Image (cartoon, rainbow, N blue to C red; front, side, top):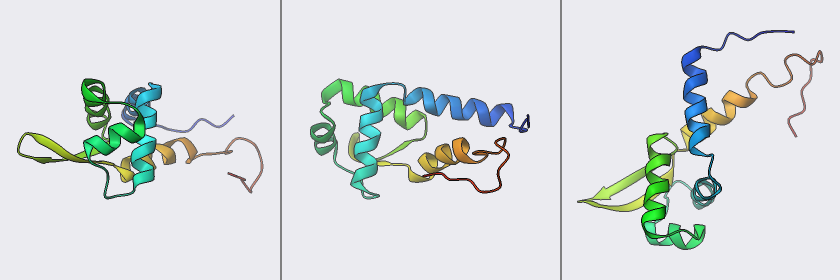
Length: 112
């Protein structure tokens, strides 16, 4: 069995990002933002599409933003736009798939 040298820091970072996605509502909020594209959505539109509103949406966005998975644009004290942090979402996916099938003994790997 091959053991990959994964730094504790990379593992810890990935674990904290996955923990932020540990809620169905937060995962859905991120999915809605990924579907919306890089321009993101207004808070109102995001709430409507995700089926989450008010302080609950604010709470979920705070956790996703702290995890680096969502970016917010502010105007004064108000959040006017929210978008997925595609680079972070992609790096999280890469973290999982980087060594896909490395121990299965084949040279070609089917990710489909």
